[in-house]
Amino acid sequence: MNGNPTPSPAMVRKVVIASVLGNAFEWFDFAIYGLFAVLIAKLFFPGGNDFASMLLTLATFGVGFAVRPLGGVLLGLYGDRVGRKKALSMTIVLMSIGTGMIGLLPTYAAIGIAAPILMVLARLIQGFSVGGEFSGATTMLVEFAPANRRGFYGSFQMCSQALAFSLGALVAYLLTVNLAPHDLESWGWRLPFLLGILIGPVGWLIRSTVDESPEFLAYASEVRRGKIKPVNTPLRTVFRDYPRAVLGSIGMSVVGTVSAYVFVFFLPIFAKKQLGMSAADVNLSTFIGTAIILVFCPLAGYLSDRFGRKAVLLPAIVAYGIASYVLFRQLVEVPTFGSLLAVQIGVSCLMSFFWGPTPIVLTEVFPVSVRSTGAAVTYNLAVLIFGGLAPFVNTWLVHVSGSNLAPIYYVQASVVIGIIGVLVLPSAARRTVPGFAT
Picture 1 (cartoon, rainbow, N blue to C red):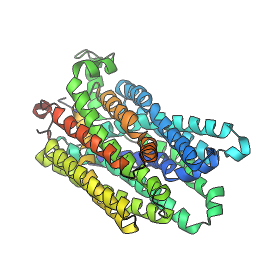
Picture 2: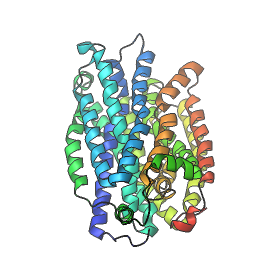
Picture 3: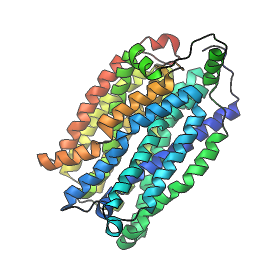
């Protein structure tokens, strides 16, 4: 949209910091549930055997994803109607409530069946919140970014997720090596969740001090002056007018979300429970792998600005598909800290190059009037169907097939869907959006 007010460099830096830190706070809260899933299974979902208990825990992990599309759509609509800033402030408060609940909940031994019920409620609040976080934070970053550097700025959305996963793994590692097993089980695991109570007001203060997106302000101004008509049904408009953008975005999101929830969330559980590796080794390797993503995502975003989105995405997804198969197979055959670290490092390097450009692609294929809604619904549908239940599905697949290689076939299916998604993305965006190329 022409005539947008140009934000000052200081405000752009402030928006990047507010988006990255706020988003990292949210994802840290969401990630630590997966990192402490083994303990949560024991304390809140005691069953007839360890397998049943773990499945219940992972199903509850997936419950948070069931409401993510709802949270994404409602908060996306809210962001498209009243502004990106207000929507982002709301998400971080909701996340702190859900995470604080988990940290304070009595266990099954103390209150019986009420414990898992309240855990499910807390996960629903977390899921609703994080459903609107991705689209809100990404849209804010992209709409403040210089036109020729939107891929670079958008990649900081994924940096913030990697930062959250990395910090979560580091906290889990430090607690595991510094606390006796009894202390970790009785109170130590609660500490990172209780931290979430403080994150809410801090994150809200950070985000309340930034300006509204200049693109959204320009759009709202033209609506008020009657130059353009407002979009009264953004959700219907997204599916009716942008079908290729929807399909391509979902396909791209599938490979990204499966990579996250298999290699960041499921793999640590798999390595501890199925391969018998120590929690300390698993948490340390997860920290290293996610730190690598944090470093390489901005490079991937920069390269997508220079050479085009698809030129970076396609080779990265193909290479990731090959490397993940080879390295995961090696881990299953020789389950050592070295082979686990090889998976985390090798896969994380390649994941970075399709994680980095994903946020900008999911937003630039939609106009400002429905951008937040479009990004929210496509991303969260993919996460609901393929991501949130990935730990549950893969744990079940390993159990029923008797093969520890079962998870890698789930990954390969996502690679095929991701490649199709990138190819489907509308090339017409190249004519109107800088940096988008076939």
